[in-house]
Image 1 (tube, rainbow, N blue to C red):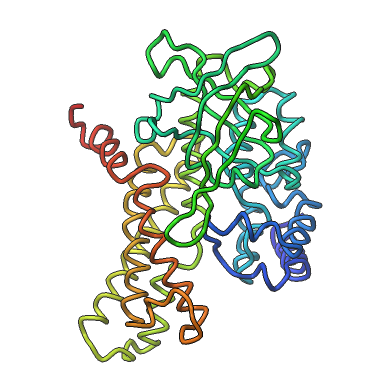
Image 2: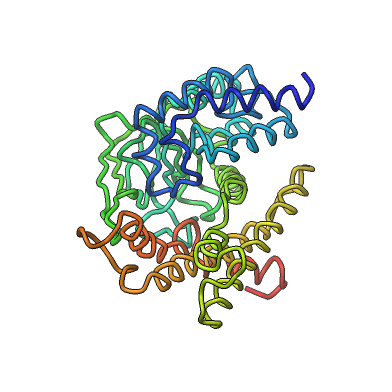
Length: 385
């Protein structure tokens, strides 16, 4: 099939299959666990999964679309044209799926990937612990190999969506007597078992996407060890590259452009205060510059080279810009940008306030600004430890 014929087919299929409620552009990660459980989300996911388009570039033998990058970009453009959210999104499709394609055994791929593509199973990530956040390699959650399974005891924290998840991919300590980076393994475990307890954490924004997760003699199958025993740190680093790449590629229409149109208009004259106009213009330019840089680097990385320190730069700069975006939107609304609830505030104004609150955390979750600056200092500037 030639590219233009595929474009027409994709356009017609997406237009016919995507419910109105799923035409909302980008979805904040705090909301995905609720949004993707709605009937409309399921219908949208099922329709796209029937063609493998929930994971368009994954191999068809695992349920993916088998599309080339060029064809997948056409599909993405047609979805973007109607502001369709991805039909499947979250740790399964973004993180563990690509990791299994690279490091998993054929048995693991056949067992897990089709259910990721279809959305049958939801996943969560078990990395951070109360004493191992920025210094993740200090994790102490222990897994002891007993015959054909691991017995796991310990705790994870900030496990996004654990209260909705069917499976977890986790870093566990399998050898406490070697240097900390060398005694870690990457395992998959069923969340629906007696040894797993999940407690949601309520945030200042009012949502509870994060959880504490406790393991008391929980079990992971020996054949659900991904990669080699005690070599999980290398697997985890690659997974984090997938995370950075996904967060870069999932960028939707930049929020400053929206602000610019809303407050400045096409002529740039709706706001009489020149200082405010300059703020909006500056932020719009920063966001657009980041978008273009991300697109360039991601294109270069498709040659097979790892994004390396660029991922940390994007995380650092993107977090700062996003935090400033929500602050600017609230500032421009004045007192209406402080509404938490009540009839005197519109739904959009209340949403804006909650976005401002939750975006206080973007410089912390997913790797703090301080961690990213350390990486940049070492790998880009060549500074000593």
